[in-house]
Length: 94
Image 1 (cartoon, rainbow, N blue to C red):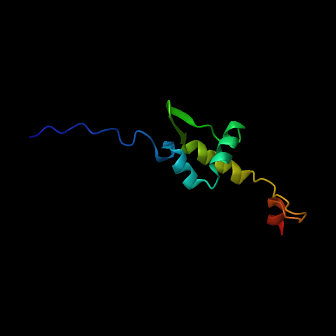
Image 2: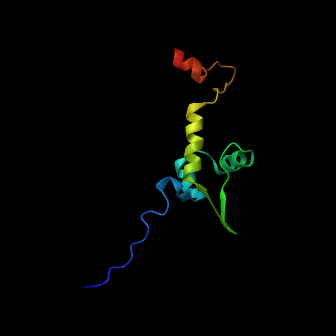
Image 3: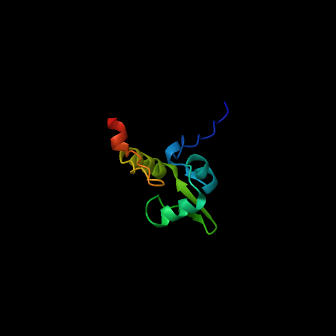
């Protein structure tokens, strides 16, 4: 009987713990690259992980937490050209 090979650990990282490249992240989150960096610097978006000297990534679980926080605490709507727009709270009550 042949010796079986040891099986690698089943998913060392959960799918949510996956590290996304900037390109992959921008495909999932509709932000411009410059907005992403600005928000990250200001602490309004998860900071990237330095993988190597020239490579960074974002942990998907941290980004999902940020998204959940956005859903739980939506930002007030922006007013354009003097028009009145309903805030998320006002829109829900209408």
